[in-house]
Image 1 (cartoon, rainbow, N blue to C red):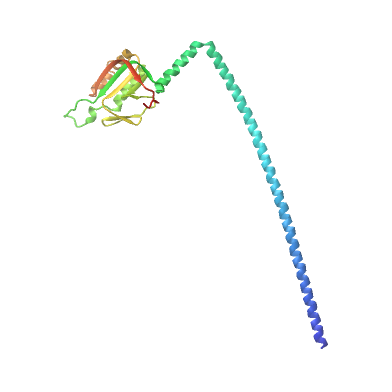
Image 2: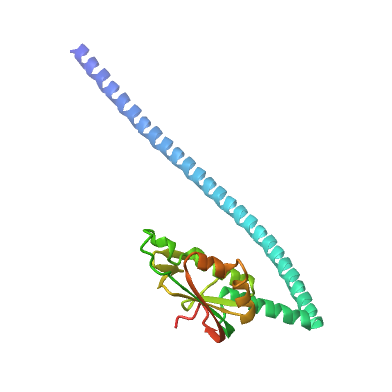
Length: 243
């Protein structure tokens, strides 16, 4: 009996000791969690502060760079204004030079087709040659872009101010392509006959085309029908005229 009571007492004492340790374990876990959480919060705050500091340094650097760039631009503006004032002085001192520059600019705009123009000149008409039953190659008597280029280049060399083909204004960047009986000029197709008009000194233009062994003779040798007319008045629109 005594032995049984002693065993029960030891069992209760042992159970009480286990609960105590369990409580201590719970307290330690909670304490560790609180400490870890506090550490992470403090670490995040430190990272946030570091990010803000980095952004502040970045914006400060950007501001300094922009200020330097603005300073450079202001210096460039002052330099350009100084040049403009120099140009103005030179123009006021040399009116003849200014007039020559204006005339040259207008001449270039005419060549580019940016201005409408009118005046005397010539008209060169190119037609396909007569059909020859003895040949099987029609390319031997039809007008090609090479023939048109011969005329245009000679007219430019001879001082033509403006050139058009079938009413289409020609510019230095115009694309001319032959496709059988038609030619394509800057995307627009035109059938024969091809009328090439040029504004300029009519007598000089005709003389340059009809020089011995020149363009006129070469066209005749290629079986092309050529007529050249002096014109008292030719009117050409600008390339921007949609009418």
